[in-house]
Image (cartoon, rainbow, N blue to C red; front, side):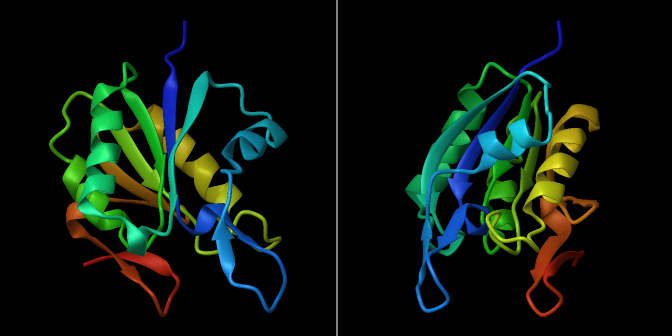
Length: 162
């Protein structure tokens, strides 16, 4: 039997919905189940939406809730979708959880937009979750990063090693 992958969603750009060009965004229900189904992903997984927040709005209590969910999971393969602005901070917090492969990913553009990197990042992170050794990683735009040495380059719209 193949192992279950727990997928925890927290909000962030990947879950943003824009109603029209003049509207502000809202974080809606996660598109992850639809993304996985539309891309014929059959690896055993379960999706749990922990919260619907922009990562800049995450509190220490929110990060603790993410930590608690990951630590309590009976799965040793964990994927966390997260806003990119504070993904590194959450990754660093998760670093002391042992005996699990934890991969954080997100998107620079909402999954609902045609030119979004969301589907690619989710697929890439799902593969990374299955193949990397135990530890905590950030998987974005075809690269894997250690949260201890990664940072978001806002101007380049990507992550880099610091």
